[in-house]
Image 1: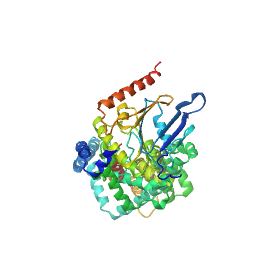
Image 2 (image 1 turned 90 degrees about the horizontal axis):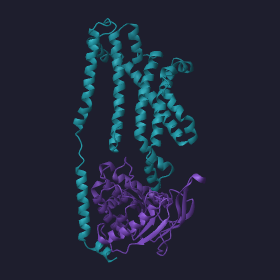
Image 3 (image 1 turned 120 degrees about the vertical axis):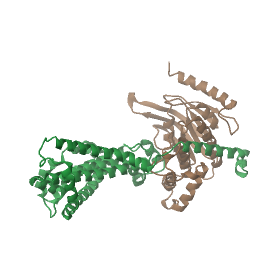
Image 4 (image 1 turned 135 degrees about the vertical axis):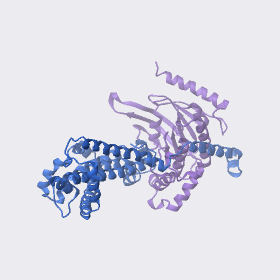
Length: 266
Length: 296
């Protein structure tokens, strides 16, 4: 993999006519149909869709966990992190252990040589730093099950940051959290994103969440997943989920989404 | 983005507010989790056991008092417990017990080795999986005593015959435990592991083996039960050695119609089996508790 240094004109993620089919012949299920999307460096893109729009499949393909049937994805050698609805922390490790493991293995993921892996003391210091970033300074010695859902998801964010990903893919990361925690995590994520100039692809089925966070909201259709429409979000940050502007744009997108979902009821 | 520089340079009240709110929410959610004391938990799991033992002894005494069998065949607790005390104070008893435990440890260790290798290979290789997966489970249903004629033909009346049967009795459970653990590694963790860049040996070391540890311990526990049963069957059939092992004591006591000693030995066999089973259960519970899993 080639890392292109300092080129800001190059997009972070280029998805070109990606299709994904499961199975073959007549029984084949088309999950994604010629999805094209370009995400600029440092951009925050919300991907919105109802069930069955292949959102998770798309992220898996970008993260190289899955291959497209047709088309191509180019991340320009960037490190790609992926977060799920579940924090997916290793329950036998402490919070510190989970993050240190990510620091240990990141060299292999990005193709860096083994001797560039961070030594132990450095890892420990880095872990403490990362926990401070997600406001979990005192919790390094805890095990994941001792934390609340929101705290675990913040540990997952810290773990993703530990990989020094340039591109962070988030698959409905806050869907299982209560509304209050979710609001706070929106603020957290926005802060981390702007401080670290991350590129974020954020998948959700929550329209307001998509508008609250995204520079752009990409609406996908269901079965198969296709890009239906893109909505720029020209609102100043930080935004509030309950603000009028967010609500009115969300209403507009919701109408379009319903129209799209309605086609399946006929 | 003028706001960004604000956030970094000066303590922004909004950012502080966020930090405080998050800390507040964390504190509220952590406070809701409380734990029972260790002593209370230990007592809660001990008293039913003590009660069960007391009830069993009472029933035993009632059966003896009913005069169903003469006391030289079925002695009561009043005859057996003094005999048990006498056994425990004898050097010969302890050297016999030592012989039995040495066999148990060696046999079980060998069974762990064989079971772990078997489990690792079968869980890894798809073809072997299909071919041997159900066979391993099937082996568990084979009563260990049925292996002895073959073992005696192969190894004569020797330690090896006993070891053979212990291993063949216990290894399938241990292998199955490992296979189950590997199988039930949560897919979401496997995905997370791949994202973290875990491949090959590192994937096993950091993810699959730790993830399958609780199931492996469950397999060990079950394997121990099989090993202990096989060993006792073996000691009754294969009577060798300088010291009277537990099985041999049992056999001698029967031949001498020394019913109190026989039942005292049975109690010892039972207690050893239970104690070691409890140790595995405790290890299992500790592991699961550390991971926040319900104990099974």
